[in-house]
Image (cartoon, rainbow, N blue to C red; front, side):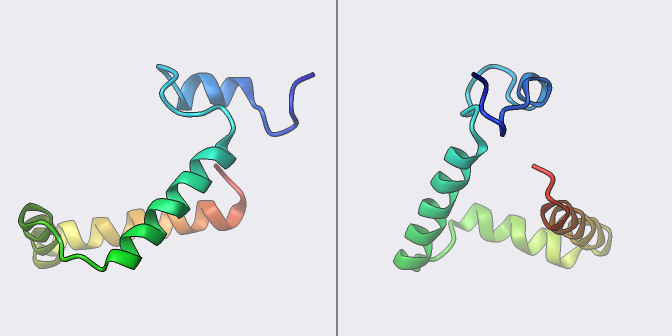
Length: 82
């Protein structure tokens, strides 16, 4: 029997190559654990990541596009899209 959360069409297109788990709950759990570990360590950002962040924050076009992408992701999450 196929679990109710399994969508074969979405799995074929969004998990091409088989490198992500079929059950999206596994990925969510892994991400939550990694976020918690990063927050616990409270380490400073790598220099390259800081430079990338600064580039996005200081370029008006990139900054707006970044905000648009974050807003779209938040909307999709709230709407229940995977």
